[in-house]
Length: 486
Ligand code: 5GP
Ligand code: SF4
Ligand code: MG
Image (cartoon, rainbow, N blue to C red; front, side, top):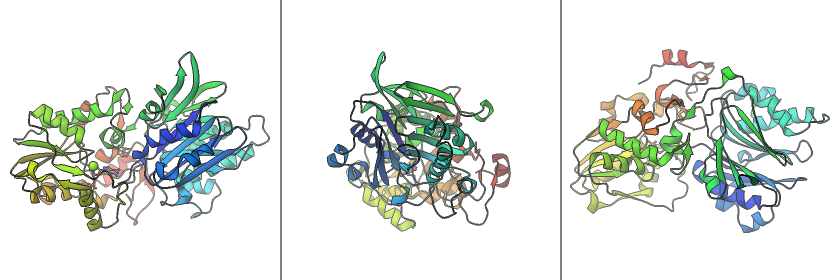
């Protein structure tokens, strides 16, 4: 399973925008570790630097000191659609208009094939949907070349409303920064301000609010689903790109479960608190007698803390995580994935031996992690293992920016709860209910995308679920009928 990308943008004349962008995308590193990049404009020229690797590998003092301007966008990528190679690193750049334009994309479009045709690209010419959008914008942009209003804005307003799927974009031309969210708001995007409220010194866009914190920007607000924000010397303006009946707030519920940083605020809720409450509610929903509550680090820690607090069972550490394993390449074969987990996690034997353990993690996808963990804990002398998962069973692939395996590889799509318990070799297992998950998040009246947990896809998806036999796109009702959930 791969996570969503991170996007960032800053318009701040007089500030070192390349350094600000570096700090911003560094704070968003968890959203993608495959490639990093930024585009910087000085009003005349847009310069793009991008490469495979982590933010701190791609950029150093020397690269940054050569990047001058008043406006920049940045990106961290974990490939979803499109293979992981240099050509797909972002920002994508097109030399159209006065200085060209650049874009960074977080999400995944659902109808790429028809877009490729429309963009006049040859199938196979590109593998990334973000690239297709860049090409669509480029042809629209050049057609407008002679018009008075030849900025990127016109092209954005013409192209983006026809896209389907998940997208949070940051875009820039020579003098403007743009941010746009798809009409369901699957992926987060927020606006921040540098300087005082009555004397702003610049404006910032970021996937998550900690990227604002680290550069000293104040959080202003989240962009609304379907909203386009335009930032330039004249200030900030906003417009809705989609019809009212197309707009529905469906932020990815997994941002709360796993993807977002714990210190991120979404819908006004701090993610760490939500995860702790997931653990508290899980303790009430599925109590058990035990000696110690432990987490699968790091993702399970806040929920384990909550479980311990609500159950009055002491919290302890049962596993140590090697922090220096930067990227564990997700290998296609099972044994290699098991080895990767084993290299990353090691048991604390004295803490485990003879104990009845409650083990908390945020999710089970293929089950590689928990299987490996349970094996380690048993070998280290754990007396009982009670698994508690702070998300409901993950039984449906995601088509909105998270690259999840085929349905056939998803554990919960193929086994009953008792089969899962036996397969994982645990004494008991419980997943938080969807109702409790939503209560733990605590954003009343807010709807989320929960398609990977329920099969209710807010935007039609290919029916093939990643299995090569069939294709075509049908809506969620038909999907449900065709493949009833578990
Ligand atoms: P599994 O090992 O069952 O296939 O995946 C579940 C584990 O991977 C959990 O520990 C969870 O924290 C983590 N995980 C869940 N979603 C993602 C993802 O999108 N990317 C990465 N790298 N890890 C994930
Ligand atoms: Fe998030 Fe799941 Fe919806 Fe994908 S399907 S956007 S992971 S809630
Ligand atoms: Mg994890």
